[in-house]
Image 1 (cartoon, helix red, strand yellow):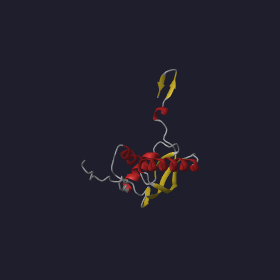
Image 2 (cartoon, helix red, strand yellow; image 1 turned 90 degrees about the horizontal axis):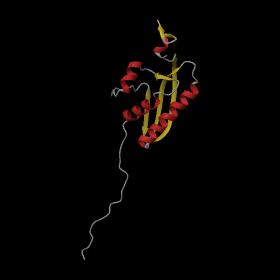
Image 3 (cartoon, helix red, strand yellow; image 1 turned 90 degrees about the vertical axis):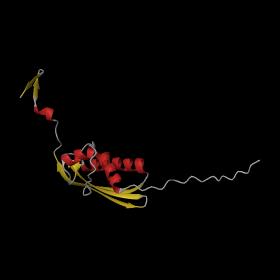
Image 4 (cartoon, helix red, strand yellow; image 1 turned 135 degrees about the vertical axis):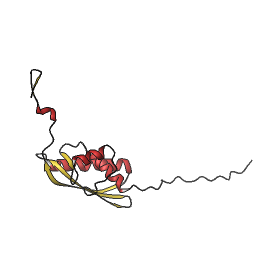
Length: 139
């Protein structure tokens, strides 16, 4: 009988690093669509749209990431809708970003500080600009 000389190698978790730009991207995508969120502070509507369609441009002024090993902390600057409850908007941002980062990276999120830097009127649907009476459009 032949002697088995193969050794079993213990499976160790793969070592990897998540770049800061990935964390920023995850945070940005998590926040889009939250009621009361207008945009990131320091960015324009055009730059927010560019990010949604895959632009690699990063807006580090509105999301600051601090990493230490597997721990990560974020500071997110936003503009909230006028009349919204800022505490509820901030809590929704924190939850969405936390879930996104933990789900995708497995990192330990130590803190997510949300800073509301300004308030703006929510954009209304442009179709509301026309009056409709009995199926006819009056301009």
